[in-house]
Length: 379
Image 1 (cartoon, rainbow, N blue to C red):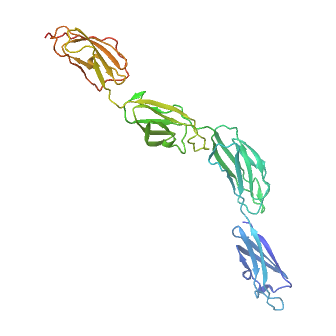
Image 2 (image 1 turned 180 degrees about the horizontal axis):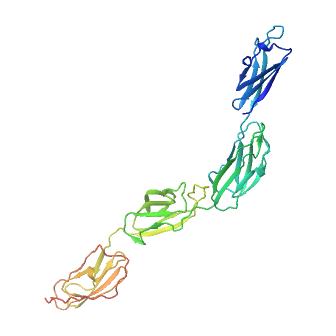
Image 3 (image 1 turned 90 degrees about the horizontal axis):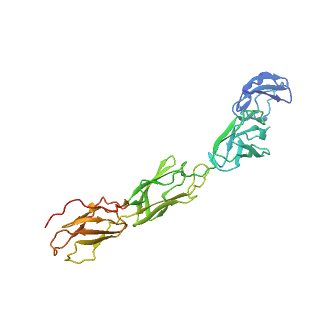
């Protein structure tokens, strides 16, 4: 602990027996080793905490050699500073930034002035210190020029880089942060188990970005003929939601560039290409027609099935009575077929029944020729 001597000079010699250490008033210090020598007295003061140290003597505390009491002695004071300056670095873009150069302010806690601070006292990793500005006081500004690639930076200053006006060495200080110049993006785009055609009234979709986003919501999605619910941030750049198609037809979801941003620097996202499917939630209807009228004696009857949409139909999906289905072919939404009547009562109606099957797929290829193998019953 620092200590120093304080000397009192009197106008004449004093009676040393009348002046003791306790006669001295004080603030923020302890006193010791009082020595009186004629017309002066010296005492050692040990400061308490940083701040003002004061000593004074009130009237009628001691006498001169003739026995006269003293008059009051005005206070003596000094500012005690026994603490080195702490150093703080700050930047508006913390803890991550996409700025280049990155601006910094270095501030010392010393309010009484500092000495010896220069640009060379600043150590920088991840860039170079430029635009140094210090013109006195307790703060300096500078920029960190980076190479524009993602990574981390560190700015620091060592112990004793400068001193304060009281001669105390400065303390060490540092700041570490992240450099992020890359826009958030998704490598795989939108992901969904649904294919090009679906009859599902709702289905889950996902997207994975290379980093977390600060403001990604369902409102950032472009939605064509669908709505989105249950939007979830699953962490690690993973997001999911449920899509609900509207009307039968084309359904699509896409994402424009720059509609949401990352946490590290606020970079806007890269556009995400559209994902699409075709929604068909309406059951297929159809009609069977023939050029013939009932009754007929024609042993080959041509029958056509016209459906309301593209379908996949097989011979097992058609029921016939009193005849053999000998030719079955077609494509798209028109399916001509032939019925071979071998033996029957000519006037008997010829019902042909098309059975709707849930397992019918609307996308599988159609065999060009199928023939029934069961023998025909005789009437």
